[in-house]
Amino acid sequence: MLGSAGVSLPQAALGEGTGPDLSTIDAAIEGLYASISGPKGQERDWEMYDAVFTDTARMGAVVGAADGESQLIEMTPAEYKAQSGPFLVTAGFTERETHRVLEVYGTVAHAWSSYHGTFVRQNGDAGEVTGINSIQLIKQGGQWRVTSIQWESTDTAGPIPAKYLD
Image 1 (cartoon, rainbow, N blue to C red):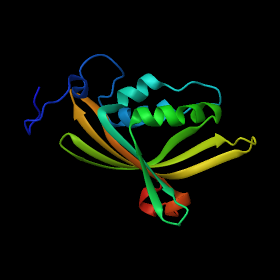
Image 2: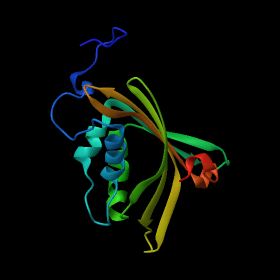
Image 3: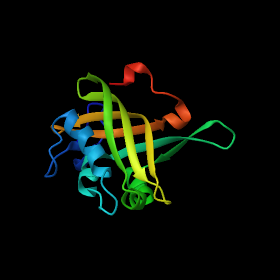
Image 4: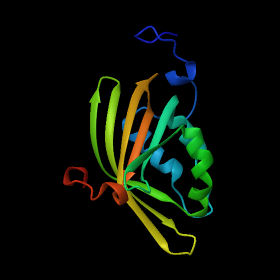
């Protein structure tokens, strides 16, 4: 099948087949957060997680480097699942959206999605993280899917600007 630019598109990227209902942007973003969140010891909803992303999706975490500069760690959703999946379960990581600024043009969308996450540290103490997810989505085959997500926490970026708060 060809896209509008004459590029061949894989069937799976077109949103055809069965799976979670991602017919709205809300469903896709809520599915993204829900799929990685849960109490300590609970396996994550990897079926939803896989469904939320396009086949060629990319992810990136902005972290602080030893020299004080920011560094982007890029990965695929599969790499994130393999690397972070065990932590999400053992630490009981739960992340929720606290505010969203959304822009949509046709079948392309961008969400600045502020988040708050909680987890349990190895020593048993409660941990928290806040920041912003920059999420790009596309609607194909009637389903909204994430093509790219990058995130940065307040640890490296500083306080969340007022326009991205509730």
